Length: 418
Image (cartoon, rainbow, N blue to C red):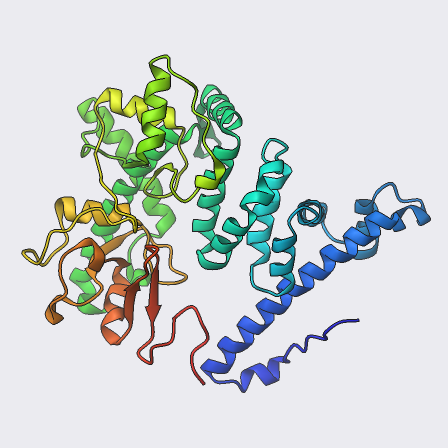
């Protein structure tokens, strides 16, 4: 009835070396994807044959819940995937082969569930499946959001407007504590997040400096006086105190970088002036964008509003997403050079690391004549900036993505050589 997957026992796993453990993880993850594909195939066939009706069940969902005791939410995701894969043969085959993840497949299924996007998805499935295989999951989610906004621009605008109208904040005293709840749109939220992150960084720096005075070079996160959660609350309090003290919080300008392609920006400027309503093509998902450097999707109208307010930074990209080249006159990435490097990604590029507190380092070390330019820029967190000195190399690919290799030359995203 198919291939039997042999899962090693805990005793067998304990006898594996590092290379064996990594290989086992990759093999089992691939098997999990194939099992998920098998589940979807069974659900699909059961639905088409109406197997669920023989015992009086009202739907394939009720039948499957009775047999598997799965949560309703999990079954909903599986059935959503089932309906999507009926139209997406390539995605189904990639999942069966274990080449794309369950999470990525479900993101595609979510887009398919939008009736305003559904008919356009098969045409873009090959392009999006390629991104699903290549990109980190969080980056793939950004691509999918961008694709949906292109495939359904009217729906995207309605969603932005609805969320903006429903914005709300509430600070309440409950017993011996205060609780803050707030929600709103991405344009205001991105600005608030940037301020909040800056204040969190300041609180972290305060704790780190104090711990360093006591522990010297042995300082680590476990030795800091406050937890991350405590620092976040204190940062929020500091924002309120700063606003009350000065009447406003003075922040660098521009605080939030909006990355928007020239065509999208020009079309929405023209529309704001009474011109034709933009009608983007979802096949242009690799070229079209309107988002913050953190990947938060924005309504292009917010970019136009920022331009009217004067909060604009013009950035010129080449085909690989490179923004500037400062030659070898400077060793450190600072000022506009650092800002431009961050436009290519604000989280650490080390596989599996999503830290936003990053340094812009040289992929090819300065000491080996590595230039201070965008082709040689690599956003890395402090930990992985130091780790790179142990023989790991960062390579920029032609499409603008990065690959980190071990000292033996194998990619960090693959199991190490045995």
